[in-house]
Image 1 (cartoon, rainbow, N blue to C red):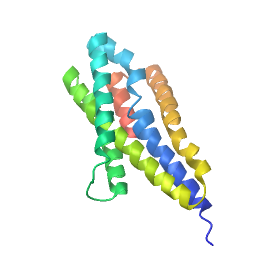
Image 2: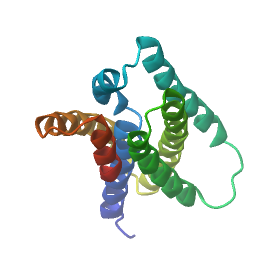
Image 3: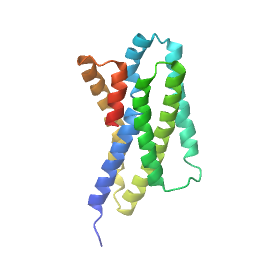
Image 4: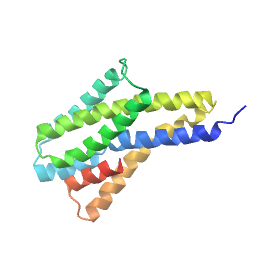
Length: 175
């Protein structure tokens, strides 16, 4: 019988990277960048909340949409969602209008949900086949790693004098 333990670990790590990018960065990077955006754009708490809510709505819509019969393979949709997550993360740095930011964050929320559901499904299937379900924690640890990375990148960007737009661009590039 073939030993798939190395494949299982690689898949769990790949899942962690996907989760770190789309969830840890794509979904949660807004929080550490928000104070810089509030200052630069004179956003009110209400406006900041609307932008955050748009991302949450996108996440809900994405979680519902991913359950539909979609053409192509789950892997293709996952890779597409990761690309959209990177593009929408960087894209926030291109606009200053609250509505435009909210729309971009809505699309980013959809991409985050697709990534969460599809990556988790693909990783769980692989780990189950290899009888290595214990590695599922590696996959989900990616979210926390991504959140921690966001905080460190924002801290470094602040020390380097990079503004809020640049912070979005850097996080998009990392994703």
